[in-house]
Image (cartoon, rainbow, N blue to C red; front, side, top):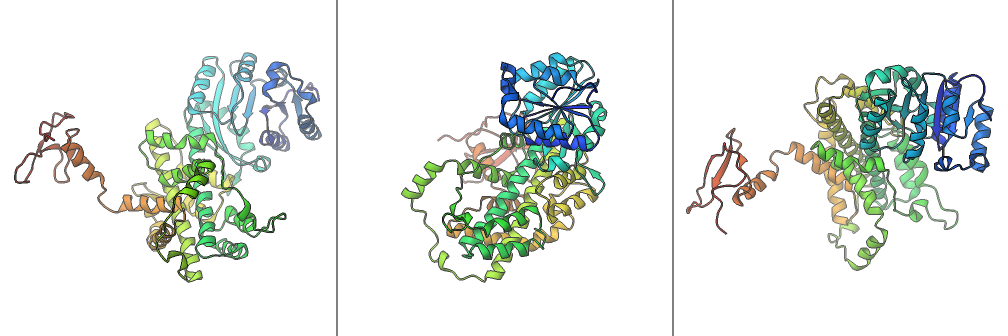
Length: 511
């Protein structure tokens, strides 16, 4: 379909159904849209109009009166000034050639809304380059799938606040709107939007991991078959864990494979993929010194899952010893299934607490300004993790006076956590005894113990470092840093002030 005479309100460079469906939603909201069906081969003179998939897409867009273009130049020429262009590619980024062609066609005052999976560094680089040309650039994290693109997604926007205000109405038109709150949220300067998307992607991973661990527990500890697990999850769906993912799992576990007759959970490979965006989460949290152990466990388990050959060899060669008689124990099924449900709840709540801590630290470090309750709400309302627990999280965040305590120990969540922590301990003990991997749950109980349990082992390691002559250390009964003379013959050592801050101790004991 050629470019018509009327100028379009918005352009979309797309390569998958999320972009095409977003165009359909814009059209439904009354906007005139031009879509460029992008492909790396466009820059090499490839005739996209001969591609059968593209032709199918073009036909569906044509029915909805959406203009289409086969090259960047034609799309840009079709837009009303100042131009507003969405770049959408869920996994990955567009080539530098496409960016170059686009920027060479744009003019000062135009805006690029980049919803691709770019790195923080690339987001900053492109933002600086385009702003020098007078072109506004917003690095936007999106949450949702191709179906929510038709009804409303969540958008986490990074960039200049003034640039966002210029296109806020446009983005909000296709964002989800839940209980009167827009799921189009401005996070802050630079790559803030991508950062928020990355954190919430990690939270989604941890929720999926935790619920999958619960299914494994029901199957291998309680010896439930698919129908029993289905019934259990249906019961959970009426509780605090009720939500989209719980319902999806309930549907899956009772399905049987037509070829083998086995439950589909028996024949599925455990080799899982992961997004590049979420894989950056650990290093980002480390730079801010924020522990996200539950989320890391979910991500690292996916890394480990891809080591299929090595794991198979290790399982063959290494005897994984288990506590004697642990697998022959008889459990109260109703009590233990409730125990694992509560463990799921507390593990997910712990992961949410870690997300809150990371967002708060990033906001402080990078000077962002966000309404953390509304940011969480935008994620909750526009993604697959809609559940009763996340709804309560949003409610608690909206009324919080401060964030002095971790979320699991604050407000009405404190009562739940204190009531459920023994359940989480019990399930962790059973999994260790039986050699059943529950990495998210075990990391959750460890995180809670470290956070709330008093002294950590780090005090001991500081003494070792001082003994070896590396660092001074702090005492609980003094404010200043001290160092210790470890050469005392009677073992009664003396600690003296180390105001110099010297790294080497003058009292280093001879070895």
